[in-house]
Length: 464
Image (cartoon, rainbow, N blue to C red; front, side, top):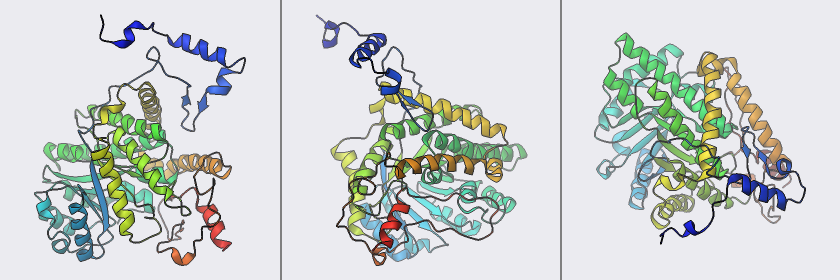
């Protein structure tokens, strides 16, 4: 007797399932009734079957993700104290955001003995300071996230100019210790600006490809050793924002991991993509803001199943409050619960799931097509200067915004079931939560992150 309970049942083919569904539709058109067409150009079927689904050999993800908590390093003493407290309460890695050089002796006092990874978001480029910081943190796992192209896309300008920026980067890449990641690729900017899943993966590849070509050129010129090239690529960190389209977001990260592995083979390299994932800001709402906690839970789960190495959650009010101990504690505990109580550690849970496997395939296929188009057009930076990337993202963002404005894309508490008694005044906003356009001169049109509910929220605030 077989131990497999399903052996006693006859197998049902994909054709039989479809025939049964069409019978139950009682004459309604199968394609019009049950097929869903997405802005990525992907058609979602009503069912998936082992006879027909397509899949890819996605590289193995991490054994378990590490949660991360972010702090602004403007006040080194305060940021250091808060970081130590966060580690004491379960944070497994720490990220510091800085707009200027800081006193790292004060910031890291009592932190270096924790043996945890550190991340930086440095909104400046100063070679001497970063070199000192590298030496100071030599025995630690550190990701500096130097992203010249990301800064260009975000601000419209280089830090200094193209030549000087790359000269500084070249200095920083030399003699890098194995546990240090110098380069970063900020894909989150594209998601928060309105790019869809396929575009995000394609732009991540094209963005990173610029760095691969640059590193390869340095090696050929004799300016960089092959060892430094290997370390730089191995420790390159990709920062993704994860949206609310649960299965698509899982497939997005899986598709990128597959394509990154494919791209590296062209350079005779083989490293897994290191991914830092965080919830998107695009779907977060000012009104009924506590619902954002539900959104970030779902998005964090997508990040886990997608194979993120590190996940940095967002406080539900992060975009309009400077500091909220309650919100930050909840955001940290959400990840701890997912990992320790729900036991969502291993990313292989989704392996073999027909729907997710086929979504991964479809996203990878379409992303690769866009990537090839960008490369034919001269590469990612050239396409930014031509305005092609900006135009494509704007087209995608406009479609999504129209769906939200029409009520087809629902954000609870905003355009669906709003609380009529909720009162928010402008005095409650410690941070300005809406788009601020800059009027300084730029080399290119820069990308502007926009939340979907901004226009509706501004209208509500103006009525009060």
